[in-house]
Length: 208
Image 1 (spheres, rainbow, N blue to C red):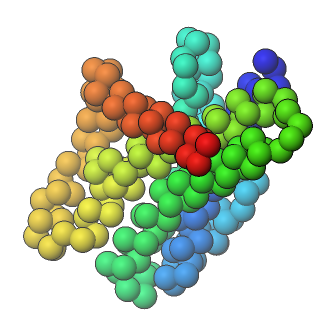
Image 2 (tube, rainbow, N blue to C red):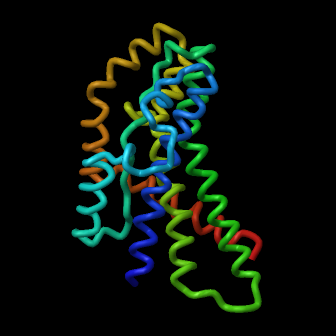
């Protein structure tokens, strides 16, 4: 349905933008104003658009008839050297985007559950859109938890490792994209979507 497609695009864009804005917002709380000065603490999509992740990848997935729509926004600039507490700042800033996506998934699931309790039947496309909102945010949250640079999971892990181990771990950073590409091409990232679907089903049916 055209309305489901259009709303799904909007939800994907909103979800990846909220993810990035939360990184910048938490960084600001730890004393780093880099994102604020760059004009990235806004829900206006224009400053956040990434040619590859926001336009080309979603377009390719749509064109190829992929069962899942996926993408990302331009990373918000953060300077950890400005943090009032480096290790805590790295941890909380990196986790902020992931928690934002899980939070959005929970909100969408709650709305879905509330609508299901109403005596009148709501349009099926609304249920489909809310289901997509839960699924895509769970996918984004789990995907970014992976400890592969430059994903947030790698930064969370690095922030908690002893200095020497963190330096050794950081050596794989230049190869992170290639690792992700290899996982994607070999289907090894399929488990992310499998887990996301299980969590989505649970969130949409719990209590019913």
